[in-house]
Length: 360
Image (cartoon, rainbow, N blue to C red; front, top):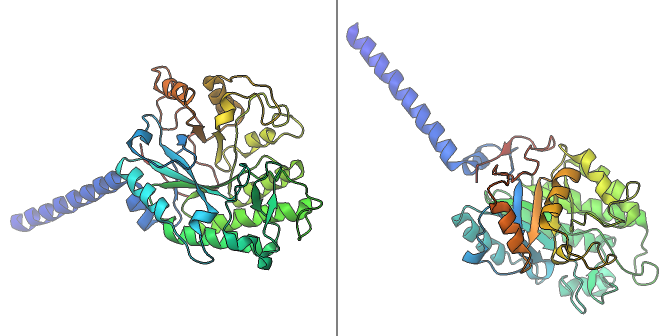
């Protein structure tokens, strides 16, 4: 009887040790293990990220006190020919950042504002897609997404990206660029533009990206046109899609307008969907987007506006020389919040089931 009891105790001890070892392994591997065992889990690491535009990544981009990098990848580079995809750059950046325990946020860039630039594949400009692009007031070329055939091709890119990267543990989020159009809607395109048609086309992309990345935060930047911002906010709320913007301008009279500005839509969405916004190069030195007079906005004021007025989960800080260093100093200050989210809203929104989190 004693031998039997000792054997039973030994077996129980072994089982307990095995369970503890397994739990320790789960904690150590963090979201990698969770990603393989919970199909509903969504990666969730809110906080401060450095927005490097499309710059190559190196050791100098492993910034202390930042959770990772937001980087732009153009449609043209990702799909150089129809149905021929090249995701080499994303794979390389994920591998590099993963080695340093940093996370990547992909911005799928379809719009550009430099004269003569076109981030769409050449085939989109062909007759099968009605010309496929329109000319902006900066003489760049952006996609006519309200053309159903163009919209379908962009959504196909989202699907392929999701198949490749949704389960990557160091891919934090995927962002669709700003909703603004900035062109002569009356005369340029073969497919007639209406505000309703344009809004539906943006919503189509939001839903396609959400379907492609069920385990990853997805976000639509919304700033214009005025008639689209409320419907897009409602759509994001109804479907658990992140809502954000390309700029943080605390003093922009249009964006901050309490009746019509897009910033009024952030607080009601807080706690329901992910919220994020970028601080682009000009945000440091202009008081408003293309409307304000030159004038430096202190980085602490930008941060506090994003935290207190917009209730952001994420801020993507542009790395403009002379200003990004001030952001680094702010985050490194002993008085600055040292929680992983860096003082931003850390709570996972209700729309994200079973978030996968880790300390880093």
